[in-house]
Length: 186
Image (cartoon, rainbow, N blue to C red; front, side):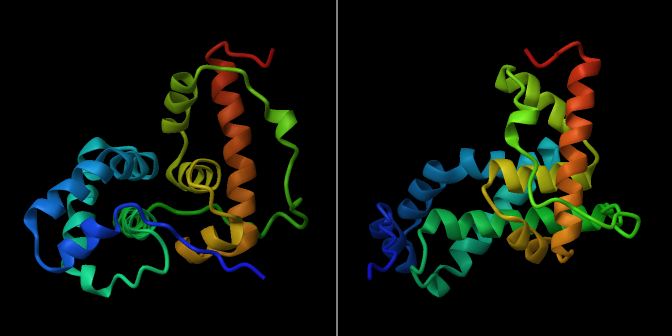
């Protein structure tokens, strides 16, 4: 049986950071800043907050780098910090997830073909920004960050059912926004 082995191409930089190297910290920052900023921005929808989260996440990562056990790559570890900090910012904003009490049955997954929207990425990104926070966060974590509903439920402290419902509603709302802008499925 094969074990999952994470190959972290930046392990040497991480080890240098553990020894206090500012140059190594700067190199890691340059390697990951743009991607981590984009993760935060997709969740928060505000550039200023995404920039704050980015700075705080790197500060946390470099402060706690001795705790990094290399069970995943540094990038995945950092991404988890960014996502957690982003969600904490949302909680400060008091965003709410729509309850699922009125829904008895939630399908496991709706076929992606139903929502196959052939649009340029920028148009979809703009439409995603218009979604309410709860919808946008679940949609981003599921579609863009690759988390499953169980993981999203754990991260957001909601039920799997709420995650699935938010995702379904987010897709429906996104489709509606795109149609209002005159973008139709081809």
